[in-house]
Amino acid sequence: MLIDGHNRVVDYLRVSVTERCNFRCQYCMPEKPFSWVPKENLLSYEDLFKFIKVSIDEGIKKVRITGGEPLLREGLENFIKMIYDYNNEIDLALTTNAFLLPRCAQKLKDAGLKRINISLDSLIPEVAHKIAQKDVLATVLKGIQAAADTGMKIKINCVPMKGINDNELIDLLEYSQKNGYMIRFIEFMENKQASDLAKGLSSDEIQAIIREKYNFKKLERSGSSPSQDYELENGYKFGIIEPHKDDFCATCNRVRLTASGVLIPCLYFEDAMSIKEAIRNNDIDKAAEILKLVLKNKPEKNKWIDADGGEVSTRAFYETGG
Ligand code: SAM
Ligand code: SF4
Image (cartoon, rainbow, N blue to C red; front, side):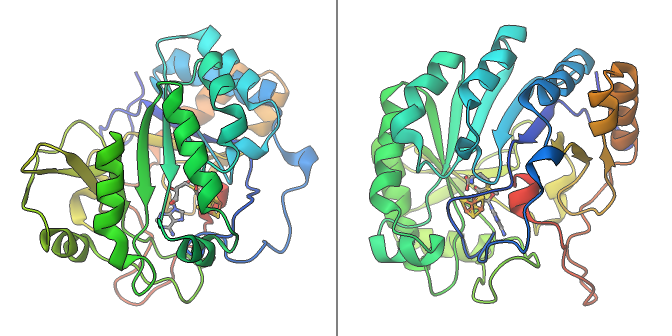
């Protein structure tokens, strides 16, 4: 079992397989980065898998593939199958913008993928276009349907932004409810890559909008989910991810690996360590040692925005995988 320096069990590994993306979401990657990590600096699937095996052997029970846009990396289904074949009890999940799902949802399911989280910020084509800076909505909706047709469990992620999609939160909730998906609204997390136009809504503001139409109650927090869940009177549950709230980090069970082999203990904490050399040298003991050291130094709370007017994190969501 992996325990961090603050006695939290860490059993969830998020693996970013690429920082590249086919969207340019305003809150994440509004401009193409000045330079991408050169391909030779990325870990191969075989090397990423070596580290995943170490992590599973040490106690990781959930692996989420993310990015950038993970479906841009060729052969993702083979990578998923490697993990599934190693341990088919691992909760194996993917986070995607869904644009490429119409052609690969079934392959991913067949490879062993169990669950998909899909980003959907608007149901209005022009607004979705404005956010992603590309005409994406029709294809994204087809992608969501393709994933649903495979029988995989789907969650929708939406980042509400002032003056952009805040008038659609009820529509997005109703779309998700009608289709049997849970929706989670994510408070916008400030970061230096985001567009200056991106201004998020707080959890209280999101709740006030939903309360204009629906009564709902707050549910007990379950396990280490980052989401605070709420329940409408008809039983439908939705979530709000509230990183600005004080207790957000208390049950954190996550560690993140970037595509270039950097192991990050917390989204908003500058310290991190590379496992690339250890893994490329097949030094499995060293990789396990680095994993434990990173967890020992995992901060108790994120340091992503300094209330005294300090720096906003420079870490890019497309690099860490969100
Ligand atoms: N490209 C995939 C996608 O968009 O689902 C996976 C990577 S993306 C970085 C993972 C998640 O991070 C998405 O749900 C996205 O909405 C969220 N995200 C990105 N930037 C964010 C920000 N500044 N604040 C809150 N959530 C953010
Ligand atoms: Fe790409 Fe996902 Fe970031 Fe949007 S949120 S730019 S889809 S990585």
